[in-house]
Every structure is written in C-alpha cells, then in structure tokens.
Length: 376
Image 1 (cartoon, rainbow, N blue to C red):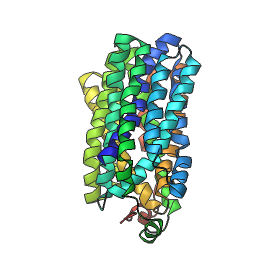
Image 2: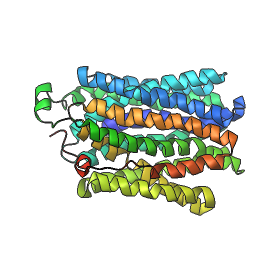
Image 3: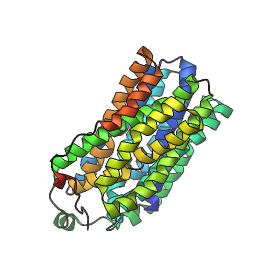
C-alpha cells in the first residue's frame, strides 16, 4: 500500500503543479480566464475522460507496467509543459502528462482494493492520501521553483516522478503477489449494480464541478484581490493538505458508520464553507477553505470504494469511471466557469462552485446506497 500511495503521490504531484503554474502562464502568455481554464481542461480531459478505457484494459488484461509508466509520463509531461515557449505547446504537454495520470489510476486503485483486506474504506483512504499529499506538494514545490528559476525551472518537477517510477519498477514483483486468480476473483464477488453506480457518478460529477472550479480559480481569485501569486498558491496548498487530513479521517469513519452518511454530510457542509471563503476572506476565509478541502477531498476514497462495490466484477472499470469520467465532466464545467468569470466576474464563478455540491440527485432506493464487499 505504501508503494501504491507513493505512485499516487507522484501522479497527483504532477497534476497539482498545474494550478500553481497557471498564474505564471497567464502572465507570460497574457491569457484570459477562459484560456487558463482550457489548460486545465486539457489536463482534465486526458487524465480523466480516458480513464474508463484504461480501467477496461486493466480488467481484461491486467497491466501492472502502467503504474511506473504512468507516473513517469505524468512528471515528464508537466515538467516540459512549464518550459514551453508557446501556449498551445503547453496545452499539448499538459495533455500528455494527463495521459500518464489516466494510465496509473485504474490499475493503482484496483491493487489498492486487493491489498486493503476487509477495511476497504480505510485502505482506499491510505491510497488516496498519497494523491492528496502529492496534489498539495505540487504548488508548494512548483511555486518557489518558478519564482527562483523562472518557468524553465519547472523541468525539475519531473525528477520526483521519475524517482517514484523507478521504485515502482522495483516493487512490481511484490505487487503481483496480491493479485487473485481470475476464477477466485469471480467467485468471491457479488453482482454488478450499474444503476447504483450511475447515481453515484452523478454525485461525483457535481462534487467535481466544485473541486475543479476551486483548484483552478482560488489562486487567480487571490491575485484579483491584490495578493501575490505565492499567496494564492499557499491557500491552494492549505485546502489540499486539509483534504489529506479529511481523507485520513473519512475512511475509518466510513468503515464504522457507513459510506453514505459520510458522503452526504461532507458535501452538505462544503457549500456554506465555500460561500464563507468567497464572501469573508482573510483568516476566516482561509479556515473555511481548509474545511472545504476536508469535506470535498476527504470523500474521494469513500466514493472510490462505493464505485468498486457497485461494480465488483469490473473494479478497474469502476475505478476509471469514478475517478475518470465523472470527475472529467467537472473539469469540462471549469471551462464554462472560466467563461462566466470573463463575462461577469471571478466572484460569480466561485459562487457557482459553492452551489454545486447542493445539486445531489435523490435516491429512491436506500438499498442501492448500501455497499457490499467487493473483494474478500
């Protein structure tokens, strides 16, 4: 699990560096908010929308080599993207980095399920915390690198990812021992429940609208208020690190009281906390933003487990859908938020982020939200 979490750290470190680079790229290329969001869309589309395809490949053939390859491609892509002299070359390499992220997640999530034992939510939280920490360290490391060395210094962002990829190559034989035989895997799982999964994906989609809107526009919002690029990225890191703490807590709580109550309470709190951040600012706003991180990011592992339990015969595909397709749709919505920011103002876009978690689809069948054990 430590190796898998480290791989998750590497891919999301590359992903998390992009929001921190956006204010510098906006200045360098004189970008509108819409074009800044397009760069995020390129990352989101390549890292998320194609994940179900990697998940399907993972279920049918297995592909452990995607773990080190995905981390390496993610790091190299974002490193070279920072140093490109053209905005559209930046977009292209951001998309390449996203493909590395997409390749890693379904296979990584599948093996996290295999190694979690009976406490699935706790195990998936351990896997998710690697991603949360990586996403938080993206802006923490990218910002001083760019401030000190310019955007060319972003090339150094590839080094941690390449080191982690080498480690994953070394531990691949160990990871292979956790994979059950196909026959026993089929015998030990329940029936797929696609209807319940569709409902869950809708919930994740609205959560992702708020998530991608915040990580895209929090640094830009702080700059618009007269603060420095570094200040905005520090607040972004605060939200992400707080989300890591939420992940640590959410898994064991979900194992104890159930996945559904944890998900509903967390998303219900996210909306008012986002509103406090936008309207009040200052220390109170920073504390509220940390609360948003706990509520939104903390449930990622919980919804991952629920998706795998709703599609126990195809957990790679379930992983690709829950982290990929539905989250990717949230990233696409971030472009619409960028257009809203250009047309109205940035405050209006952030208020939409505050409202997004409230649009949760109702459940008419309680049974569909009671997960079952996917892997014995």
